[in-house]
Image (cartoon, rainbow, N blue to C red; front, side, top):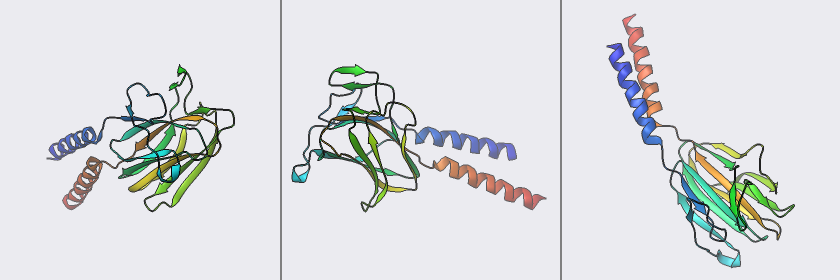
Length: 197
């Protein structure tokens, strides 16, 4: 009996993990040459004359974003929902610039360009912020790590009138239902074993 229950739990776990996977969505900001395999967003101008756009809610467990800031008024906002947590990292390993593909990524551009990254809660409270200077092309890729279900935004803004290109990966960290089922099953087996004993 124990073996049958264990086998059923294993099947449930692997089935749940498969369901939890999702295709990667790649978004290219409209003012930058499209990255191969990405979906290009057209140029949108935010109220007040500031160049920027809001892509709305992002679907998928992993989203790669390729964008560009060129002035102090550029502001780009990426909204997303996570059921468990989120990792936001630079993408290293090659991007496409106005001059063609180059072996640079993460954050590149004019020397000394400042770019501000902010992680915001649903009420626009700033949970974390980091100011980076170009060139961030290798090293520690992590920008933010945040745990907890909810609605969040990643806000990227230029602070000077120089150009910078950024490559960002947003990875949701859900708690799969299969893990909860597995824990519940193990707990039930433990209780049953104690009663037998």
